[in-house]
Length: 120
Length: 109
Image (cartoon, rainbow over all chains, first blue to last red; front, side, top):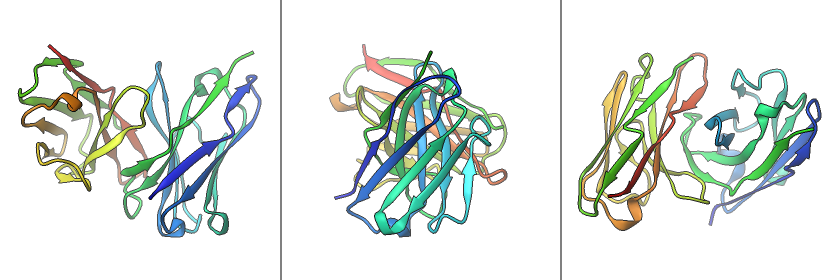
């Protein structure tokens, strides 16, 4: 069965950095685009970033462009999100999700999320 | 940036009722729209993609329609487990980005 397990969240000061990880299992990881979506009471559900099968193509929301970097390691069945220059508005539950097909950003499997809190 | 609006914000209905949820895009997204259901403490669940296609395992009482800027999710007869928050999502071709609507809560009347 498909499983996605996020880790790496925590409390960080404004301007700080954090690296999120997502361990995937139960499917052929390298055959799927993957993405990060976040959710907060203030901003609702917000698409953050997506990455193509091999990691060649990267896509970002304007709100995180230049600060966040998505990457993957297909040998380790893992997805990552490096978050730099964090702001209070980045506080959210971050989900890792599998793209249904071909990079259309429809997410058919989600993890349980990892909480990121940016506060001094 | 394409903005999605959803209406109503809250829909108060009873089991067996028909639910009609609306999603409007600020500009055309052709049929690149998905619908998700979210229950408290859970991740969103994909219901509909490409505006009209049901995801694997989704009951036939869920249907989607629309194109361009106006989309509808219909639940033909509400089951007790359908009371939840529903989000629409769009994907634009260029730039290749996505966004979600603010959600419609379907609660028990």
